[in-house]
Every structure is written in structure tokens, then in C-alpha cells.
Image (cartoon, rainbow, N blue to C red):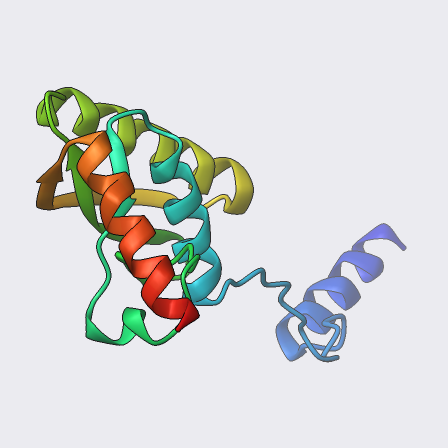
Length: 146
């Protein structure tokens, strides 16, 4: 009788009788590029020595406190790459700040999303003293009020 059961099981396995042919569901977690840009932008601004992020032409018209200004990302299913354009504070070490920024951006993105950051590229687009930066911001905010 056991031999008959084995034969029947083998036959059913070969013909697909025992297979569940229902739909196969796959769970996914995905993120908009803007989410990764925000995480990277907020993280980078936490590093002392970065005065601000430098945006493109359109950032002048999109509002003053855009946290994604100066940040661009390339997001895949499991990995991402981050490009940052920063204004460095005069007297600070760019290589030291780069290491700090790369570390905090990678850590925060990995923690919050599970994505692996395969590269962080930092482009220093300007150098200013803290005083000069404050003057520039006050000029810009005064001109925005007019």
C-alpha cells in the first residue's frame, strides 16, 4: 500500500496536480526620488562646515527653505547614488567634511529606507565665511519681501 501511495505522489508531482496555481504576490517597498533627496539634504545640512546647499536656476523660484536644493539622486530597487552641491564654510577642511557628509548620508538613507548608498559625490560650488553667508541671506530675504 505504501508503494501505491509513493507512485500516486510521484505521478501527481509530475503532472502538477499538487501545485498551487494561484496568483503569486510579491511585496515591495519603494521610494520617490524626492524622499531620498530630502533625507540626503537634511542629513548633509547637519554637518558643521556646510553653510548651505547650492541649487540650480529653478531653486530661486521654488521657495527659500527647499531641503532638496542642491541634491540629486539616482534611486534603484536596492541601491541609490547621491550627488550634493554644497557651500563650504571658509576655514573648514573639505576632505574632513566630505567624510562626515558621506557617512551621515549613507547611514541615514540605509536606516530610513534600507537602500544601500553606492556613492556619495560632493561638489563644493562656493566657499564663504559665516558672516558673508549671513549677509547674502539677509539681502536675499529682504529682496524677497519687496
